[in-house]
Image (cartoon, rainbow, N blue to C red; front, side, top):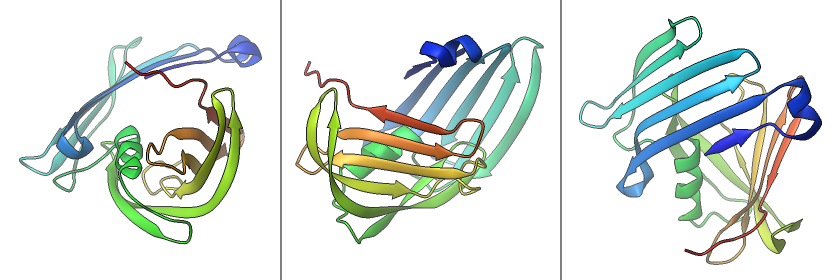
Length: 188
């Protein structure tokens, strides 16, 4: 996944992040890398999810200063998901509005059973079309997995495809609200 700042935001705060994750069956995470270049900062985080030991190892480095910023090892369930894998796992589940489930998730520094709550059916319009969707809330912020305060909402199409048509992160200042919407659907 590539994340780049655009428009006016890019002139104020340049972001160029590259995120990759490796999975086994069931979207169980095995390794991940985040190379983040944000303004004058350039960090790299590497995570190894060792299913044979039920441990996750995390190493974050400042690539400009050639220094280790954070190193840790934590216990995890045998099959744990990071954010993208958790979204893929949710797409394979049936969680109706008013129902909830839990998905084991980790970022390599924390691990938790993250509550995912089905909230409402809504119509969502994006550049990729109009969709009947179900809105979910993923309770992974506020110290559960990520320390930042905020909310994460996900809209999946209310059909067999369960396409992620919109994701909204409502964060406290300075980030504000980040809204991701489906632009187009491609079939290979």
